[in-house]
Structures are given as C-alpha cells and as structure tokens.
Image 1: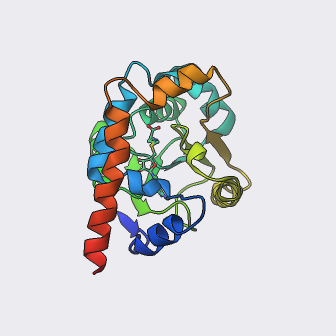
Image 2: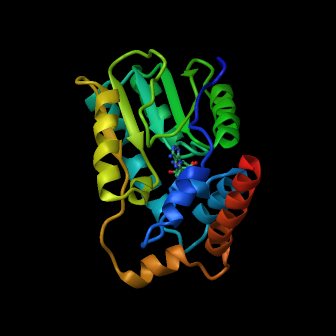
Image 3: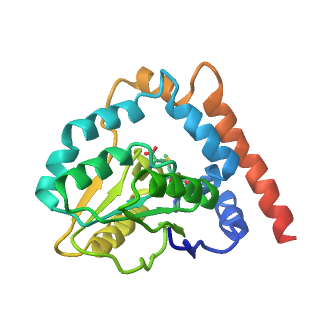
Length: 226
Ligand SMILES: C[S@@+](CC[C@H](N)C(=O)[O-])C[C@H]1O[C@@H](n2cnc3c(N)ncnc32)[C@H](O)[C@@H]1O
C-alpha cells in the first residue's frame, strides 16, 4: 500500500471557538471522531437500538451487484470511510464485476483510516488501496485514479451537515466523481420519533459516552494550541 496522502486541515480550535460563540451553538461533526470517539462509534453500530448500520448493510447486500453493473466503476472513493466494514460489500461486487481496481477511502480520523486501509489491502491484494487523510468539508485533491469513479458517502453522515454545507459538499462530491461517474449516498428517511430517539440515546449510555468524549477532544485541542 502506498504512503497515505495527508490533507487534514489545521487545528480545530478556531472552528470550535467560532461554533460555541454563536447564539445557536454548533460544532463540526469531526470533533466526535478522535481515536476514542471512532472506537465508541464502532460500539454504537453494534447496539440493538442503532438500526441504520444494519439497514444500510442489507441495502448494499441487495444492490451492490446492480450498482457495479450500472456504473462499471474502476475506482471507489469513500468519504468518511471509518472502519470500511460495509464497504467490503461494494468492493466484493466491484471485483466480481471485474471493473474495480482502486479504492480511495477518505477520513479525518487518521489512525482508524490507516489501520482499516491496511486491513483492506491485506484482504484484497489486487486492489490499489490509496487512503487519504482529509477533511471532506473542504476541497480534496485526490491522487489520480482510473475512471469511471463511484463516490460513496455511507452511514448517514450527510445528516451531520447543515443544509448549506450539504449543498457545497454534494457539489464537490459530484465534481470529484466526474461526468462519467456515479454517486452513492446513504441517508435515513422519516420514521417513528421513538425509534430515532432510542437509536441516538441508547439505554446502555454508549451514545452519551460518544458525545461526552467531545469535551476531552476540545480540552486536548485547547492544550495543543496554547
Ligand atoms: C457516522 S461515521 C460513518 C462511518 C462509516 N462510513 C459507516 O458507514 O459506518 C462518520 C465518519 O466520517 C468521518 N468524518 C467526520 N467528519 C469528517 C470530515 N470533516 N472529513 C472527513 N471525515 C470525517 C468520521 O471520522 C467517521 O469515520
């Protein structure tokens, strides 16, 4: 596997101070995903109440073959790739179809990205795995890779973006995809509010720990900046 491309943006402190100085406080989702946060998120995806992961997995199981028949993608680009677990379904479908030769996972959380990309490289030695450490909220210059590209954004992460951010993100995503490529976005639909509340406020308190970890991330960021 080649050395990863590191396009991560500089310190977060300015963004944190700006977000917490607004009348309606907000923080970028990337503060949730330091190494500890990424590990806790993994636990969340295995909670019985957290339905999105299994729902997306079953959709991909059903549709990955069709996605490659339609796209004949040679490169799979994945935003916010994390542990790249469900991505295996796409990679296996792309390999079975015979078109896929390159996988470019992008994530701000370097450690998780690089460990997972190494595992992917070992699992699929014929695949050119090119991890990119980067912030998908800004423009990312990907290394050259064969077209057509399939760019995907799974896990409902698009739901973490505000409307204006989503519009900018999707514009960058389609530009990176190119005119001959395809875009795949996983997102939740409207459903029973109780089900959503249980998924995002689980009885074991794992989501609570995930959110409280943000305080540690902010404290660490403040110390780094001083
Ligand atoms: C909800 S998780 C989804 C992980 C995986 N794709 C899945 O479907 O389970 C969001 C992922 O996006 C990454 N992420 C969050 N903000 C990011 C940003 N601004 N730039 C790049 N990656 C980001 C996190 O590190 C995390 O791996």
